[in-house]
Image (cartoon, rainbow over all chains, first blue to last red; front, side):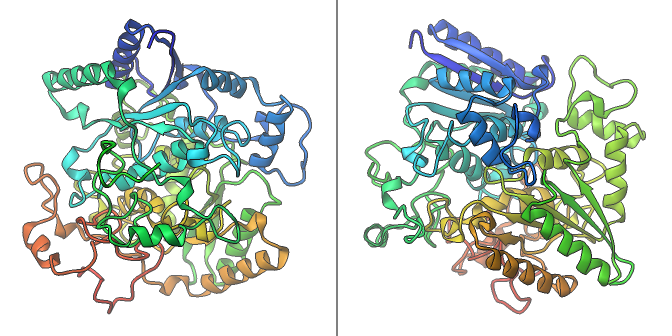
Length: 283
Length: 283
Protein backbone atom coordinates (compact mmCIF):
# COMPACT_ATOMS: atom_id res chain seq x y z
CA UNK A 1 0.00 0.00 0.00
CA UNK A 2 3.02 2.22 0.33
CA UNK A 3 3.01 5.05 -2.16
CA UNK A 4 -0.64 4.70 -3.01
CA UNK A 5 -2.47 7.97 -3.54
CA UNK A 6 -5.86 8.56 -1.98
CA UNK A 7 -8.15 11.53 -2.58
CA UNK A 8 -10.79 12.35 0.01
CA UNK A 9 -13.49 14.67 -1.33
CA UNK A 10 -14.89 16.07 1.88
CA UNK A 11 -18.09 18.08 2.25
CA UNK A 12 -18.86 19.29 5.75
CA UNK A 13 -18.82 22.86 6.98
CA UNK A 14 -17.53 22.20 10.48
CA UNK A 15 -14.14 20.92 11.70
CA UNK A 16 -15.96 19.81 14.88
CA UNK A 17 -18.36 17.53 13.01
CA UNK A 18 -18.56 13.75 13.09
CA UNK A 19 -17.75 13.79 9.36
CA UNK A 20 -14.52 15.64 10.14
CA UNK A 21 -13.64 12.97 12.70
CA UNK A 22 -14.32 10.26 10.12
CA UNK A 23 -12.08 12.05 7.62
CA UNK A 24 -9.33 12.41 10.23
CA UNK A 25 -9.41 8.69 11.00
CA UNK A 26 -9.11 7.92 7.28
CA UNK A 27 -6.17 10.29 6.83
CA UNK A 28 -4.40 8.89 9.90
CA UNK A 29 -4.86 5.19 9.08
CA UNK A 30 -4.08 5.55 5.37
CA UNK A 31 -0.96 7.60 6.05
CA UNK A 32 0.17 4.98 8.57
CA UNK A 33 -0.14 2.50 5.70
CA UNK A 34 2.26 4.68 3.70
CA UNK A 35 -0.40 6.19 1.44
CA UNK A 36 -0.26 9.80 0.31
CA UNK A 37 -3.63 11.34 1.18
CA UNK A 38 -4.96 14.53 -0.38
CA UNK A 39 -8.15 16.12 0.95
CA UNK A 40 -10.37 18.39 -1.13
CA UNK A 41 -12.21 20.24 1.63
CA UNK A 42 -14.98 21.67 -0.54
CA UNK A 43 -16.49 24.22 1.86
CA UNK A 44 -13.06 25.43 3.00
CA UNK A 45 -12.05 25.76 -0.68
CA UNK A 46 -15.29 27.65 -1.34
CA UNK A 47 -15.67 25.21 -4.21
CA UNK A 48 -18.05 26.48 -6.87
CA UNK A 49 -21.01 24.13 -7.23
CA UNK A 50 -22.84 25.50 -10.26
CA UNK A 51 -21.95 24.51 -13.80
CA UNK A 52 -21.55 27.78 -15.70
CA UNK A 53 -19.59 29.32 -18.55
CA UNK A 54 -17.06 30.51 -15.93
CA UNK A 55 -15.67 26.97 -16.13
CA UNK A 56 -14.34 27.66 -19.61
CA UNK A 57 -11.45 29.95 -20.50
CA UNK A 58 -11.51 31.76 -23.81
CA UNK A 59 -14.29 31.73 -26.35
CA UNK A 60 -17.25 29.42 -26.32
CA UNK A 61 -17.85 27.22 -29.36
CA UNK A 62 -21.53 28.09 -29.33
CA UNK A 63 -22.19 31.24 -27.29
CA UNK A 64 -25.73 31.49 -28.71
CA UNK A 65 -26.71 28.22 -27.06
CA UNK A 66 -24.51 27.34 -24.12
CA UNK A 67 -24.35 23.57 -23.67
CA UNK A 68 -22.29 22.82 -20.56
CA UNK A 69 -21.37 19.23 -21.45
CA UNK A 70 -20.16 20.05 -24.96
CA UNK A 71 -18.34 23.24 -24.04
CA UNK A 72 -16.45 21.64 -21.15
CA UNK A 73 -15.54 18.64 -23.30
CA UNK A 74 -14.01 20.96 -25.91
CA UNK A 75 -12.34 23.06 -23.21
CA UNK A 76 -10.84 19.92 -21.65
CA UNK A 77 -9.46 18.82 -25.03
CA UNK A 78 -7.88 22.22 -25.52
CA UNK A 79 -6.67 22.81 -21.94
CA UNK A 80 -9.11 25.66 -21.39
CA UNK A 81 -10.97 24.52 -18.27
CA UNK A 82 -10.93 26.76 -15.19
CA UNK A 83 -8.02 26.24 -12.82
CA UNK A 84 -10.13 24.82 -10.00
CA UNK A 85 -11.41 22.02 -12.24
CA UNK A 86 -7.94 21.32 -13.66
CA UNK A 87 -6.56 21.01 -10.14
CA UNK A 88 -9.23 18.47 -9.22
CA UNK A 89 -8.53 16.57 -12.46
CA UNK A 90 -4.89 16.21 -11.40
CA UNK A 91 -5.90 14.88 -8.00
CA UNK A 92 -8.28 12.37 -9.59
CA UNK A 93 -5.63 11.24 -12.08
CA UNK A 94 -3.12 10.62 -9.32
CA UNK A 95 -5.55 8.86 -6.98
CA UNK A 96 -5.89 5.12 -6.81
CA UNK A 97 -8.84 5.49 -4.44
CA UNK A 98 -11.34 8.31 -3.98
CA UNK A 99 -13.40 8.51 -0.80
CA UNK A 100 -16.40 10.82 -0.81
CA UNK A 101 -17.06 11.92 2.78
CA UNK A 102 -20.32 13.76 3.45
CA UNK A 103 -23.53 13.98 5.44
CA UNK A 104 -26.46 12.72 3.36
CA UNK A 105 -28.64 15.67 2.31
CA UNK A 106 -32.03 14.82 0.85
CA UNK A 107 -31.25 11.19 -0.02
CA UNK A 108 -28.10 12.22 -1.92
CA UNK A 109 -24.90 14.24 -1.69
CA UNK A 110 -24.93 17.91 -0.57
CA UNK A 111 -25.12 20.39 -3.46
CA UNK A 112 -21.45 21.40 -3.11
CA UNK A 113 -20.44 17.76 -3.67
CA UNK A 114 -22.95 17.37 -6.51
CA UNK A 115 -21.16 20.38 -7.97
CA UNK A 116 -17.85 18.55 -7.72
CA UNK A 117 -19.37 15.59 -9.59
CA UNK A 118 -21.02 17.83 -12.23
CA UNK A 119 -17.91 19.94 -12.83
CA UNK A 120 -14.97 17.56 -12.32
CA UNK A 121 -16.28 14.46 -14.11
CA UNK A 122 -15.91 16.15 -17.48
CA UNK A 123 -16.78 14.29 -20.68
CA UNK A 124 -13.54 13.13 -22.24
CA UNK A 125 -11.70 13.24 -18.92
CA UNK A 126 -14.02 10.93 -16.97
CA UNK A 127 -16.13 9.15 -19.59
CA UNK A 128 -17.03 8.93 -23.24
CA UNK A 129 -19.72 7.07 -25.12
CA UNK A 130 -17.18 4.35 -25.85
CA UNK A 131 -15.69 4.32 -22.37
CA UNK A 132 -18.28 3.82 -19.69
CA UNK A 133 -19.24 1.36 -16.98
CA UNK A 134 -16.73 -1.48 -16.81
CA UNK A 135 -15.03 -0.22 -19.93
CA UNK A 136 -14.84 3.11 -18.11
CA UNK A 137 -11.87 5.45 -17.97
CA UNK A 138 -11.30 4.93 -14.24
CA UNK A 139 -11.59 1.15 -14.24
CA UNK A 140 -8.24 0.82 -12.49
CA UNK A 141 -9.32 3.11 -9.67
CA UNK A 142 -11.53 2.50 -6.66
CA UNK A 143 -14.14 4.83 -5.21
CA UNK A 144 -16.45 4.74 -2.24
CA UNK A 145 -19.15 6.73 -0.53
CA UNK A 146 -18.70 7.32 3.19
CA UNK A 147 -21.56 9.22 4.76
CA UNK A 148 -23.62 9.95 7.81
CA UNK A 149 -27.40 9.89 7.87
CA UNK A 150 -29.99 11.66 9.98
CA UNK A 151 -32.19 8.56 10.01
CA UNK A 152 -31.55 5.25 11.79
CA UNK A 153 -30.90 2.16 9.67
CA UNK A 154 -34.37 0.70 10.23
CA UNK A 155 -35.93 3.59 8.29
CA UNK A 156 -33.87 2.61 5.23
CA UNK A 157 -34.81 -1.07 5.15
CA UNK A 158 -37.05 -2.35 2.33
CA UNK A 159 -39.94 -2.18 4.83
CA UNK A 160 -38.76 1.05 6.52
CA UNK A 161 -40.51 4.32 5.83
CA UNK A 162 -37.68 5.71 3.64
CA UNK A 163 -37.49 2.53 1.56
CA UNK A 164 -34.44 0.39 0.75
CA UNK A 165 -31.11 2.24 1.02
CA UNK A 166 -29.91 0.14 -1.93
CA UNK A 167 -32.42 1.91 -4.17
CA UNK A 168 -31.39 5.32 -2.84
CA UNK A 169 -27.70 4.63 -3.53
CA UNK A 170 -28.18 3.31 -7.07
CA UNK A 171 -28.01 6.62 -8.98
CA UNK A 172 -24.83 7.68 -7.20
CA UNK A 173 -23.00 4.38 -7.22
CA UNK A 174 -24.06 3.02 -10.60
CA UNK A 175 -24.93 6.26 -12.39
CA UNK A 176 -21.91 8.30 -11.32
CA UNK A 177 -19.12 6.12 -9.94
CA UNK A 178 -19.48 2.89 -11.87
CA UNK A 179 -20.47 4.84 -15.00
CA UNK A 180 -16.96 6.33 -14.97
CA UNK A 181 -15.54 2.83 -14.51
CA UNK A 182 -14.64 3.03 -10.82
CA UNK A 183 -14.57 -0.20 -8.84
CA UNK A 184 -17.05 0.83 -6.18
CA UNK A 185 -16.30 -0.33 -2.65
CA UNK A 186 -19.24 -0.95 -0.32
CA UNK A 187 -20.46 2.32 1.16
CA UNK A 188 -19.45 3.17 4.72
CA UNK A 189 -22.68 4.27 6.33
CA UNK A 190 -22.73 5.99 9.71
CA UNK A 191 -26.33 5.74 10.87
CA UNK A 192 -27.59 8.80 12.73
CA UNK A 193 -24.41 9.71 14.64
CA UNK A 194 -25.99 12.99 15.80
CA UNK A 195 -28.61 11.05 17.72
CA UNK A 196 -26.16 8.48 19.10
CA UNK A 197 -24.39 8.65 22.48
CA UNK A 198 -20.62 9.37 22.47
CA UNK A 199 -19.65 5.73 23.05
CA UNK A 200 -21.68 4.64 20.01
CA UNK A 201 -20.02 7.32 17.88
CA UNK A 202 -16.64 6.11 19.16
CA UNK A 203 -17.54 2.55 18.23
CA UNK A 204 -18.52 3.74 14.73
CA UNK A 205 -15.11 5.37 14.32
CA UNK A 206 -13.43 2.22 15.64
CA UNK A 207 -15.23 0.07 13.07
CA UNK A 208 -14.18 2.50 10.33
CA UNK A 209 -10.58 2.35 11.51
CA UNK A 210 -10.70 -1.45 11.40
CA UNK A 211 -12.25 -1.48 7.94
CA UNK A 212 -9.60 0.88 6.56
CA UNK A 213 -6.98 -1.69 7.56
CA UNK A 214 -8.29 -4.13 4.96
CA UNK A 215 -9.75 -1.70 2.45
CA UNK A 216 -7.33 -2.47 -0.37
CA UNK A 217 -8.20 -6.15 -0.30
CA UNK A 218 -11.95 -5.67 -0.45
CA UNK A 219 -14.06 -7.08 -3.27
CA UNK A 220 -15.99 -4.23 -4.93
CA UNK A 221 -19.76 -4.16 -5.32
CA UNK A 222 -21.31 -6.09 -8.18
CA UNK A 223 -22.60 -4.24 -11.23
CA UNK A 224 -23.84 -5.57 -14.54
CA UNK A 225 -20.89 -6.22 -16.87
CA UNK A 226 -21.07 -4.12 -20.03
CA UNK A 227 -20.65 -7.27 -22.13
CA UNK A 228 -24.17 -8.24 -21.09
CA UNK A 229 -25.53 -5.43 -23.27
CA UNK A 230 -25.81 -4.74 -26.97
CA UNK A 231 -23.82 -1.50 -26.95
CA UNK A 232 -25.26 -0.02 -30.12
CA UNK A 233 -27.97 2.53 -30.81
CA UNK A 234 -29.82 -0.03 -32.93
CA UNK A 235 -29.62 -2.49 -30.04
CA UNK A 236 -30.75 0.24 -27.65
CA UNK A 237 -27.98 -0.58 -25.15
CA UNK A 238 -30.23 -3.34 -23.83
CA UNK A 239 -29.48 -6.74 -22.37
CA UNK A 240 -28.46 -9.33 -24.98
CA UNK A 241 -31.12 -11.98 -25.53
CA UNK A 242 -28.77 -14.83 -24.65
CA UNK A 243 -28.02 -13.19 -21.28
CA UNK A 244 -31.70 -12.64 -20.66
CA UNK A 245 -32.30 -16.30 -21.35
CA UNK A 246 -29.43 -17.36 -19.14
CA UNK A 247 -30.84 -15.22 -16.32
CA UNK A 248 -34.41 -16.45 -16.73
CA UNK A 249 -34.00 -19.25 -14.15
CA UNK A 250 -32.38 -16.94 -11.67
CA UNK A 251 -34.48 -15.89 -8.63
CA UNK A 252 -33.12 -12.32 -8.58
CA UNK A 253 -32.44 -9.48 -11.00
CA UNK A 254 -28.81 -8.70 -11.89
CA UNK A 255 -28.49 -5.50 -9.86
CA UNK A 256 -30.78 -3.03 -8.08
CA UNK A 257 -31.41 -1.17 -11.33
CA UNK A 258 -31.27 -4.13 -13.74
CA UNK A 259 -33.97 -6.02 -11.89
CA UNK A 260 -35.63 -7.53 -15.00
CA UNK A 261 -38.97 -7.59 -13.18
CA UNK A 262 -37.60 -9.90 -10.47
CA UNK A 263 -36.86 -9.30 -6.78
CA UNK A 264 -33.78 -7.13 -6.28
CA UNK A 265 -30.59 -9.00 -5.37
CA UNK A 266 -30.39 -8.31 -1.61
CA UNK A 267 -27.90 -5.64 -0.52
CA UNK A 268 -26.59 -5.22 -4.06
CA UNK A 269 -25.51 -1.61 -3.40
CA UNK A 270 -24.39 -2.04 0.20
CA UNK A 271 -22.47 -5.31 0.39
CA UNK A 272 -19.90 -6.93 -1.85
CA UNK A 273 -20.76 -10.44 -3.03
CA UNK A 274 -17.95 -12.94 -2.44
CA UNK A 275 -16.39 -13.94 -5.79
CA UNK A 276 -17.56 -17.56 -5.47
CA UNK A 277 -21.18 -16.56 -4.88
CA UNK A 278 -23.57 -17.84 -7.53
CA UNK A 279 -25.32 -14.44 -7.64
CA UNK A 280 -22.11 -12.88 -8.90
CA UNK A 281 -22.28 -12.07 -12.62
CA UNK A 282 -19.38 -13.51 -14.57
CA UNK A 283 -16.87 -10.82 -15.55
CA UNK B 1 -57.77 26.70 -12.57
CA UNK B 2 -58.09 30.48 -12.61
CA UNK B 3 -56.03 32.16 -9.93
CA UNK B 4 -53.93 29.09 -9.25
CA UNK B 5 -50.28 29.82 -8.53
CA UNK B 6 -47.54 27.80 -10.15
CA UNK B 7 -43.82 27.98 -9.40
CA UNK B 8 -41.34 26.75 -12.01
CA UNK B 9 -37.89 26.14 -10.59
CA UNK B 10 -35.80 26.27 -13.72
CA UNK B 11 -32.16 25.23 -14.04
CA UNK B 12 -30.62 25.70 -17.46
CA UNK B 13 -27.94 28.19 -18.40
CA UNK B 14 -29.14 29.01 -21.90
CA UNK B 15 -32.31 30.79 -23.08
CA UNK B 16 -31.82 28.95 -26.41
CA UNK B 17 -32.01 25.51 -24.82
CA UNK B 18 -34.70 22.89 -25.19
CA UNK B 19 -35.35 23.21 -21.46
CA UNK B 20 -36.06 26.92 -21.97
CA UNK B 21 -38.56 26.03 -24.71
CA UNK B 22 -40.23 23.54 -22.37
CA UNK B 23 -40.46 26.20 -19.67
CA UNK B 24 -41.92 28.70 -22.14
CA UNK B 25 -44.63 26.26 -23.20
CA UNK B 26 -45.54 25.68 -19.54
CA UNK B 27 -45.72 29.41 -18.80
CA UNK B 28 -47.81 30.03 -21.90
CA UNK B 29 -50.32 27.22 -21.40
CA UNK B 30 -50.70 27.74 -17.65
CA UNK B 31 -51.20 31.49 -18.05
CA UNK B 32 -53.81 30.80 -20.73
CA UNK B 33 -55.58 28.72 -18.07
CA UNK B 34 -55.60 31.76 -15.83
CA UNK B 35 -52.80 30.60 -13.55
CA UNK B 36 -50.22 32.99 -12.13
CA UNK B 37 -46.81 31.55 -13.01
CA UNK B 38 -43.60 32.52 -11.24
CA UNK B 39 -40.25 31.28 -12.56
CA UNK B 40 -37.16 30.94 -10.38
CA UNK B 41 -34.46 31.00 -13.06
CA UNK B 42 -31.64 29.69 -10.88
CA UNK B 43 -28.63 30.42 -13.12
CA UNK B 44 -29.95 33.88 -14.04
CA UNK B 45 -30.50 34.57 -10.31
CA UNK B 46 -26.97 33.32 -9.64
CA UNK B 47 -28.66 31.20 -6.98
CA UNK B 48 -26.23 30.06 -4.30
CA UNK B 49 -26.04 26.26 -4.23
CA UNK B 50 -23.91 25.56 -1.17
CA UNK B 51 -25.36 25.29 2.33
CA UNK B 52 -23.25 27.59 4.48
CA UNK B 53 -23.50 29.86 7.50
CA UNK B 54 -24.18 32.74 5.09
CA UNK B 55 -27.76 31.43 5.04
CA UNK B 56 -28.26 32.60 8.62
CA UNK B 57 -28.48 36.21 9.77
CA UNK B 58 -27.19 37.09 13.21
CA UNK B 59 -25.47 34.79 15.65
CA UNK B 60 -25.25 31.05 15.32
CA UNK B 61 -26.60 28.92 18.18
CA UNK B 62 -23.51 26.74 18.09
CA UNK B 63 -20.64 28.48 16.26
CA UNK B 64 -18.16 25.86 17.55
CA UNK B 65 -19.93 23.11 15.64
CA UNK B 66 -21.94 24.42 12.72
CA UNK B 67 -24.84 22.10 11.98
CA UNK B 68 -26.66 23.40 8.90
CA UNK B 69 -29.98 21.64 9.54
CA UNK B 70 -30.29 22.81 13.14
CA UNK B 71 -29.08 26.36 12.53
CA UNK B 72 -31.42 26.94 9.59
CA UNK B 73 -34.34 25.48 11.53
CA UNK B 74 -33.70 27.95 14.37
CA UNK B 75 -33.14 30.79 11.91
CA UNK B 76 -36.44 29.99 10.17
CA UNK B 77 -38.30 30.02 13.50
CA UNK B 78 -36.80 33.41 14.30
CA UNK B 79 -37.05 34.98 10.84
CA UNK B 80 -33.26 35.07 10.41
CA UNK B 81 -32.79 33.17 7.15
CA UNK B 82 -31.02 34.92 4.27
CA UNK B 83 -33.26 36.95 1.97
CA UNK B 84 -32.83 34.65 -1.04
CA UNK B 85 -34.15 31.68 0.95
CA UNK B 86 -37.02 33.70 2.42
CA UNK B 87 -38.04 34.80 -1.06
CA UNK B 88 -38.15 31.21 -2.28
CA UNK B 89 -40.15 30.23 0.82
CA UNK B 90 -42.80 32.82 -0.12
CA UNK B 91 -42.98 31.45 -3.65
CA UNK B 92 -43.36 27.89 -2.35
CA UNK B 93 -46.05 28.91 0.13
CA UNK B 94 -48.07 30.61 -2.58
CA UNK B 95 -47.69 27.83 -5.15
CA UNK B 96 -50.28 25.14 -5.60
CA UNK B 97 -47.97 23.35 -8.04
CA UNK B 98 -44.17 23.37 -8.38
CA UNK B 99 -42.55 22.21 -11.60
CA UNK B 100 -38.83 21.48 -11.52
CA UNK B 101 -37.44 21.99 -15.03
CA UNK B 102 -33.89 20.80 -15.67
CA UNK B 103 -31.53 18.69 -17.75
CA UNK B 104 -30.61 15.52 -15.87
CA UNK B 105 -27.00 15.73 -14.68
CA UNK B 106 -25.45 12.51 -13.40
CA UNK B 107 -28.71 10.65 -12.80
CA UNK B 108 -30.08 13.53 -10.72
CA UNK B 109 -30.68 17.28 -10.66
CA UNK B 110 -27.88 19.75 -11.49
CA UNK B 111 -26.00 21.03 -8.42
CA UNK B 112 -27.65 24.45 -8.57
CA UNK B 113 -31.06 22.78 -8.26
CA UNK B 114 -29.80 20.42 -5.55
CA UNK B 115 -28.77 23.63 -3.79
CA UNK B 116 -32.33 24.93 -4.07
CA UNK B 117 -33.61 21.70 -2.49
CA UNK B 118 -30.95 21.72 0.25
CA UNK B 119 -31.44 25.39 1.13
CA UNK B 120 -35.14 26.07 0.53
CA UNK B 121 -36.66 22.91 2.03
CA UNK B 122 -35.76 24.03 5.54
CA UNK B 123 -36.69 21.90 8.54
CA UNK B 124 -39.76 23.45 10.12
CA UNK B 125 -40.78 25.16 6.90
CA UNK B 126 -40.90 22.05 4.68
CA UNK B 127 -40.94 19.10 7.07
CA UNK B 128 -40.65 18.00 10.66
CA UNK B 129 -40.32 14.60 12.29
CA UNK B 130 -44.07 14.64 12.88
CA UNK B 131 -44.95 16.02 9.48
CA UNK B 132 -43.50 13.97 6.68
CA UNK B 133 -44.63 11.85 3.74
CA UNK B 134 -48.40 11.88 3.44
CA UNK B 135 -48.70 13.74 6.72
CA UNK B 136 -46.25 16.21 5.17
CA UNK B 137 -46.48 19.99 5.31
CA UNK B 138 -47.09 20.37 1.58
CA UNK B 139 -49.74 17.65 1.27
CA UNK B 140 -52.15 20.10 -0.37
CA UNK B 141 -49.60 21.02 -3.04
CA UNK B 142 -48.50 19.20 -6.17
CA UNK B 143 -44.96 18.88 -7.51
CA UNK B 144 -43.41 17.31 -10.58
CA UNK B 145 -40.07 16.75 -12.22
CA UNK B 146 -39.80 17.77 -15.87
CA UNK B 147 -36.42 16.99 -17.37
CA UNK B 148 -34.41 16.18 -20.43
CA UNK B 149 -31.94 13.30 -20.63
CA UNK B 150 -28.83 12.69 -22.68
CA UNK B 151 -29.70 8.99 -23.04
CA UNK B 152 -32.54 7.46 -25.03
CA UNK B 153 -35.37 5.75 -23.14
CA UNK B 154 -34.15 2.24 -23.95
CA UNK B 155 -31.02 2.81 -21.85
CA UNK B 156 -33.22 3.47 -18.81
CA UNK B 157 -35.36 0.33 -19.04
CA UNK B 158 -34.94 -2.41 -16.40
CA UNK B 159 -32.82 -4.27 -18.99
CA UNK B 160 -31.12 -1.13 -20.37
CA UNK B 161 -27.52 -0.34 -19.51
CA UNK B 162 -28.43 2.52 -17.11
CA UNK B 163 -31.03 0.42 -15.29
CA UNK B 164 -34.66 1.22 -14.53
CA UNK B 165 -35.48 4.97 -14.53
CA UNK B 166 -37.96 4.24 -11.72
CA UNK B 167 -35.03 3.35 -9.44
CA UNK B 168 -33.12 6.47 -10.46
CA UNK B 169 -36.10 8.73 -9.69
CA UNK B 170 -36.91 7.22 -6.29
CA UNK B 171 -34.59 9.36 -4.11
CA UNK B 172 -35.84 12.61 -5.70
CA UNK B 173 -39.53 11.80 -5.87
CA UNK B 174 -39.97 9.84 -2.64
CA UNK B 175 -37.03 11.18 -0.65
CA UNK B 176 -37.46 14.87 -1.44
CA UNK B 177 -40.89 15.64 -2.89
CA UNK B 178 -43.13 13.08 -1.22
CA UNK B 179 -41.13 13.37 2.01
CA UNK B 180 -42.33 16.99 2.20
CA UNK B 181 -45.88 15.80 1.54
CA UNK B 182 -46.19 16.89 -2.09
CA UNK B 183 -48.58 14.98 -4.31
CA UNK B 184 -46.07 13.99 -6.98
CA UNK B 185 -47.31 14.08 -10.55
CA UNK B 186 -45.76 11.65 -13.02
CA UNK B 187 -42.45 13.00 -14.30
CA UNK B 188 -42.36 14.60 -17.72
CA UNK B 189 -39.33 13.03 -19.37
CA UNK B 190 -37.88 14.39 -22.60
CA UNK B 191 -35.67 11.60 -23.89
CA UNK B 192 -32.47 12.82 -25.56
CA UNK B 193 -33.82 15.96 -27.28
CA UNK B 194 -30.27 17.02 -28.23
CA UNK B 195 -29.95 13.93 -30.40
CA UNK B 196 -33.43 14.19 -31.89
CA UNK B 197 -34.33 15.90 -35.17
CA UNK B 198 -36.29 19.20 -34.97
CA UNK B 199 -39.65 17.60 -35.79
CA UNK B 200 -39.23 15.11 -32.94
CA UNK B 201 -38.41 17.93 -30.54
CA UNK B 202 -41.49 19.79 -31.78
CA UNK B 203 -43.60 16.69 -31.17
CA UNK B 204 -42.20 16.47 -27.63
CA UNK B 205 -43.23 20.06 -26.98
CA UNK B 206 -46.65 19.35 -28.48
CA UNK B 207 -47.16 16.39 -26.14
CA UNK B 208 -46.13 18.55 -23.19
CA UNK B 209 -48.58 21.26 -24.25
CA UNK B 210 -51.36 18.66 -24.44
CA UNK B 211 -50.49 17.20 -21.04
CA UNK B 212 -50.51 20.64 -19.40
CA UNK B 213 -54.13 20.98 -20.51
CA UNK B 214 -55.19 18.18 -18.17
CA UNK B 215 -52.49 18.49 -15.50
CA UNK B 216 -54.78 19.60 -12.66
CA UNK B 217 -56.97 16.52 -13.07
CA UNK B 218 -54.10 14.01 -13.02
CA UNK B 219 -53.87 11.28 -10.40
CA UNK B 220 -50.53 11.57 -8.58
CA UNK B 221 -47.99 8.75 -8.32
CA UNK B 222 -48.51 6.09 -5.69
CA UNK B 223 -46.38 6.09 -2.55
CA UNK B 224 -46.70 4.03 0.61
CA UNK B 225 -49.20 5.64 2.98
CA UNK B 226 -47.63 6.64 6.29
CA UNK B 227 -50.35 4.71 8.15
CA UNK B 228 -48.70 1.51 6.91
CA UNK B 229 -45.75 2.17 9.25
CA UNK B 230 -45.21 2.14 12.98
CA UNK B 231 -44.09 5.75 13.29
CA UNK B 232 -42.15 5.39 16.51
CA UNK B 233 -38.47 4.99 17.29
CA UNK B 234 -39.23 1.75 19.15
CA UNK B 235 -41.10 0.49 16.08
CA UNK B 236 -38.22 1.65 13.88
CA UNK B 237 -40.58 3.38 11.40
CA UNK B 238 -41.13 -0.04 9.80
CA UNK B 239 -44.12 -1.57 8.12
CA UNK B 240 -46.81 -2.74 10.54
CA UNK B 241 -47.05 -6.51 10.79
CA UNK B 242 -50.72 -6.54 9.77
CA UNK B 243 -49.87 -4.64 6.58
CA UNK B 244 -47.00 -6.99 5.87
CA UNK B 245 -49.36 -9.92 6.25
CA UNK B 246 -51.99 -8.27 4.07
CA UNK B 247 -49.34 -7.71 1.37
CA UNK B 248 -47.93 -11.24 1.56
CA UNK B 249 -50.19 -12.56 -1.21
CA UNK B 250 -49.43 -9.61 -3.46
CA UNK B 251 -47.17 -10.25 -6.47
CA UNK B 252 -45.38 -6.87 -6.20
CA UNK B 253 -43.80 -4.70 -3.54
CA UNK B 254 -45.65 -1.54 -2.46
CA UNK B 255 -43.39 0.97 -4.22
CA UNK B 256 -39.96 1.03 -5.88
CA UNK B 257 -38.27 1.51 -2.51
CA UNK B 258 -40.67 -0.52 -0.35
CA UNK B 259 -40.23 -3.64 -2.43
CA UNK B 260 -40.38 -6.12 0.49
CA UNK B 261 -38.15 -8.51 -1.45
CA UNK B 262 -40.68 -8.81 -4.29
CA UNK B 263 -40.59 -7.57 -7.88
CA UNK B 264 -40.99 -3.79 -8.12
CA UNK B 265 -44.46 -2.56 -9.03
CA UNK B 266 -43.94 -1.65 -12.72
CA UNK B 267 -43.56 2.07 -13.50
CA UNK B 268 -44.24 3.04 -9.90
CA UNK B 269 -42.22 6.28 -10.24
CA UNK B 270 -43.15 7.11 -13.82
CA UNK B 271 -46.87 6.43 -14.21
CA UNK B 272 -49.86 7.11 -12.02
CA UNK B 273 -51.95 4.06 -11.16
CA UNK B 274 -55.67 4.57 -11.83
CA UNK B 275 -57.57 4.80 -8.51
CA UNK B 276 -59.49 1.56 -9.18
CA UNK B 277 -56.32 -0.46 -9.81
CA UNK B 278 -55.80 -3.30 -7.37
CA UNK B 279 -52.11 -2.38 -7.02
CA UNK B 280 -53.12 0.95 -5.54
CA UNK B 281 -52.54 1.05 -1.78
CA UNK B 282 -55.61 2.10 0.18
CA UNK B 283 -55.30 5.68 1.42
